[in-house]
Image 1 (cartoon, one colour):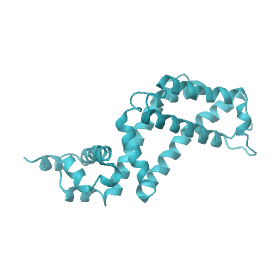
Image 2 (cartoon, rainbow, N blue to C red):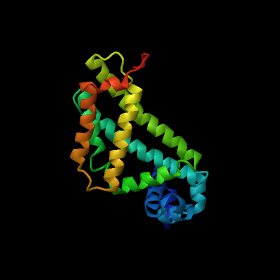
Image 3 (tube, helix red, strand yellow):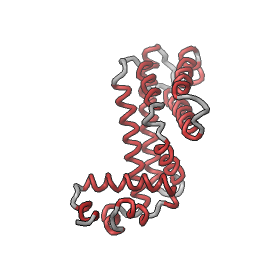
Length: 215
């Protein structure tokens, strides 16, 4: 039996999962522009027609791969927070540790993410996934920052602005760590994020004041 015949007998979700994995391999190897449908087909061992059966084109396939990766990342971060102590600070610390875990610092993940980012402005389907995933990411941070504000008794804290700031810090550190691993260790990355929270608790919250209630 041919590889494609075996592939076609798989359950639909498993077939899609295999296509997504092949897409990630091609994105890492060739980048977004170079990862053609034919190359993805060759990696998956299937025909172009089989991919066209599931997706309208490369943009939709790459968008689903992006969604799958962000789902994995958010799942790992949520699991880390769920296993932490119930205080907001402990949950933030768990988020930081998860962000600098070996799984999230995997060079293959960085390669795929750079390919996704490079396609955001050229493919609407990928841009929509990007907006959704980053909205979800910031919403998680906003929620735990709101909880921190409640525990600290802050009544004028702009959790939206703080979440944008912390998200940018995490993104910058993650990208720098991936591109230049010798710049700082994962432990130092966590330390930098903890210092950000220390600064907010020590009075930096004044920089995140708001005029209306939004927590």
